[in-house]
Length: 310
Image (cartoon, rainbow, N blue to C red):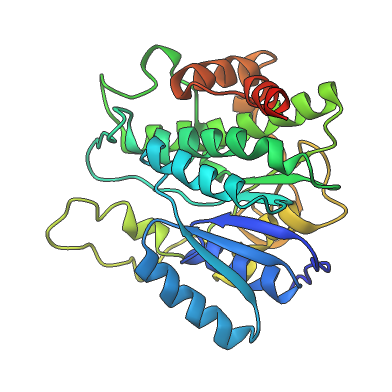
C-alpha cells in the first residue's frame, strides 16, 4: 500500500468525501496528519463516513461541510463559507462526480448533470478558492479524471447534449474536461508564477458505488452491481492511490496525470499518458474560456477582485 507523505499542518478539502475514492482519500490524508474538510452533498452520509473514518483513524481532524456541485449557488455558498473562516487552504481535491445516469438530467442551472457535477462545479470551486490557495506556501489542486477521457471529445456546439444524448459520451466529455482544466491551470500557474501545482489522476477500474449510483438516478427499482466482469478490477484502497499521489506526493509534477500501471486499469501508480483527446494546442484554453463564461468567474478575475479588496 502506498504511504502518503506527512501532511501535518496542511488543510485539505476533498469533495465527495463520504464514499469510494473520496472516503479512502480522506482517511489516508487524515492518517498522514492533514486537517480534512469533507465536502459532501448529504450531511447525513457525510457524518456516517466521518464516524467510520474516526474508528479507523482515531483523533483524525475532520470537518464536514455541504456542497452540491450540481447547484452553482451551493458551490458559491460553500466557497464563501470557507473563505469567511480566514483559515488556510493548502490543497483542493476535486474528487466528486456522477457517472452515466440512464436519461439526460438537467441541473437547476440548466446544464447537463454530468457536465456540471464533474466539471463546471469543480471549475467554479477551484476558481473561487484560488486566492486562499495561493496564500499557502505549497498550494495544490488535484482533480479526478477517468480513463474514459481517452475516448472523449469536447462538443463545443452542444456541450449540454441537448441534441442527441448519450450518457457515456457526456461522461467522457466531462472527464476529458477535468483533464483539460488541470492542464490549463498548470499553464496559468507557470505563466503567472503562482507556485500552485495542478495535477490529475484516474482510478482505473476501481470497484466503488460510482458505477451504480449514476445509473440508478431516477429509477424506481435500483440496478444491482454486476457480480462479474472480464476486466481486471481493484478495491478502493488501491484505486485511490493515483489521486493520493497527485494530491500529496512531493514527486508529483506540474500538469502531470497519474493512474494505475497495469493496462491503465489496476496496479501501482505511475505517470499516465495524457490521451490524444487532450492534446489539442488551444483546447484547454478554449474550454477554460467557455467555462469562465458559463460560471461567470475565472482565475484572473478572482485574483484581481481579491487583490482589490485588500
